Length: 574
Image (cartoon, rainbow, N blue to C red; front, top):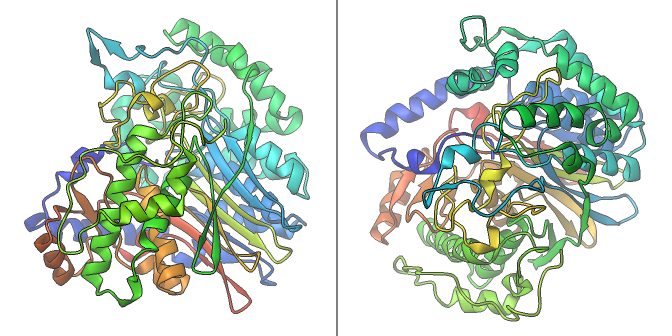
């Protein structure tokens, strides 16, 4: 979820002559990441009783400060999320949405759906002209945004499970916005890449570009006075300021004047949803994931269930990755047809059944690639149904564990900042299938199940997950990176639960990604030539995994927290 790069464009990278230069460029860009090491992003409290992992050291520090001020893992996660909206605004912010999974100290698990919702005036063909999809309309500008849900979800989580006051987790982020911070290499690149589009919107350009319409450089200070003001009003008045107060009115006025359809009433009508988590038993562990409208929880469970039918530990490396790729392909074919908002389409629970997984596993040929023409038919497809990009991981020794994946969708969302608010609005309307069969920004195709409809939540790949052993949490994990979120989380779970690797080992192993369409598999640039040749011999079309995606996780190993940020961010391999 955290890049504007079209997956089709990324997959055009050639394997051979370009691979060396790509790895070299990625090494330079990643190693320079604010001069930071992995320990700046993933840290434990001094007493070892709390842990935080995020994509930004400033945000991680905000989480540690929340612990220091008497908060728990829920408070820390909320503080991180609000701070990321300031320092990591190319990925997330209060103008977007999130999914939250919380394991409370008393053993209760809650799944909070803060996904964006299509406005009341949205309709199936709103991005169609002369029978063809106009892709840019769902990505940039006034029509691209759905009603944000992050504030409602974060406020609810902190209210029911946190220890601090809401203002305690919001105001530190307001201070960062007010005082400014040094732009890191990642944001500098994203700003430069998106400057032309951002220049189309005066309020956006006034914050993120200079007088000449150019992006600031790495190390320059970014000050966001309007965002600080919005945060302070939010701390004072709570979510009502955003959903029923001045903020909603400002959005309404801007949309009316700029051809948008989102109105103040859409904000007032926003509904937070509590979901029943997906639970999957794997190798004496229980994996808790997020249900639809997230496709992540379903696909992670479906693929894990398929892989359970193979002895991955006894396979050689090429055999193991082959089976994983083939299982991904089968599951993503199901995603394209079956998955959508369960309030508007029939999503079969059979997708995550062990019996169904056995039928899919039987389709995998261990010697060669199998052509997957279309989706498969899970049991109970008509009657046993689910009812109605940045990742944050926190945990504490009281037993509170949190997994939050939050996003604006592509870089800087719709590129729209409503004047006076400082808030970037999402472009989650692109997560709908704006025309069945037409790929979105990440190359994903969908069917009628995920078509545009008023009051509907678009399908997401966000996959916040918590793992239990003997009823106690031992791992929290999630990722950013569009559809690769699912496969990043999956492989962290495969490597820890099935291959019994430590979390650090698991996240450093080469990753692959296959999403059914296009018929290409991404593979980490540092994967060995022997693995590549063996997979290609089986019929896989490989492309180097570009600088796209990041996993955050915390495990409990030998009684101690092990927080791990995406190693590719600081190792030169992503």
